[in-house]
Each structure stands twice: as C-alpha cells, then as structure tokens.
Image 1: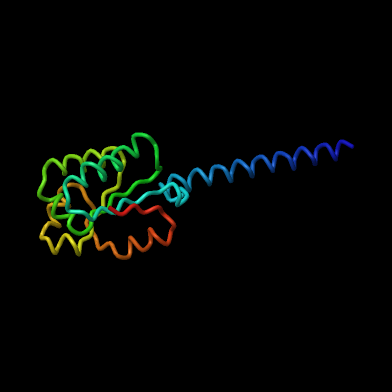
Image 2: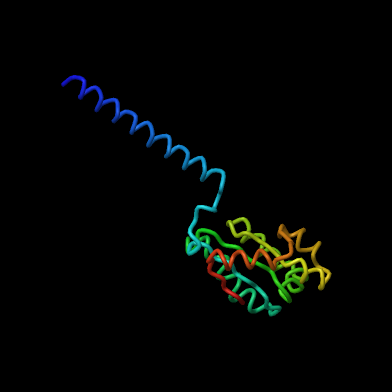
Amino acid sequence: MWNRILLTGLLLALAVIGALAVAGATNEEKAVTGNNELKPEEKLVVLWTSGDPEVATKMVFMYAGNAPRFGWWEDITLVVWGPSAELLAGSEELQGAVRAMERSGVKLEACKACSDQYGVSEKLAECGIDVKYMGEALTAYLKEGRHVLTI
C-alpha cells in the first residue's frame, strides 16, 4: 500500500515538474520571438499610398495613431508606399506625427523602390522608418493572414 502511495506521489511530482518546465520554455520562447506569438487577426498593416495630405491627417494618422492608444490591435505596421513617401519626406508636420506613432508602438516601414524613385529614401530613414524593398514583406504579411488596410 505504501509503495502505491509513494509511486503515486513520485509520479505526481514528476508531472508537476514537467508542467513547470514546459511553462518556463513557453515564456522563454515568447521573450525571444516578440510579437510572433500573436495571431494574424491581432495584427494590422496600414498600407499608406495616397499623396493627399488630408487623407494622411484625417484618416491614416487618426486611425493608425489611435489604434495603439485604444488597444484596437496588438501589432500595427504603417507602410509608406508610393506618393505617400514624397508627401511625408516634404512635411515636417507629418514627420512629427509619424514619430509620435512610432513612440506609441507602431512599426514604420517604407518601400525602397518607391522612395528611391522620389529621391527620398534617406529622408525617410532619418525619420526612423525602416526603408526596404516591400514586395516580399507585403506578400508575407498577406500570406500570414494579417489584416491590411490600404489607403
């Protein structure tokens, strides 16, 4: 009888230790992967293509700027693409708004092919924007199942 009790206690202790080890590994994985553990439906990509300053201030910046503040999305990426690159590079006011979004946790990216065409890649990089070729990155976002809002 005591053997059964000892064996049961030993198995229970091993089960608890195993569960704690798995939980610890999960937390370590989260620390390493960052936001990769988020589900795609918790991620938003705002693809900003418009060169219209009113569209920038009255839609793109309002939504992308307020989304982290109100917790609408867990992961937000603003992609500057096409005419928006030229608009942003030429406006200190818009650059300030983009920097504020970055401070609130919005990731900033820009299409290098587009910004090179407008001659503004260096200026966008100075604003803290990750200027890179976006074709593969956008394709990956779409295939991952992220929500993409194109403006």
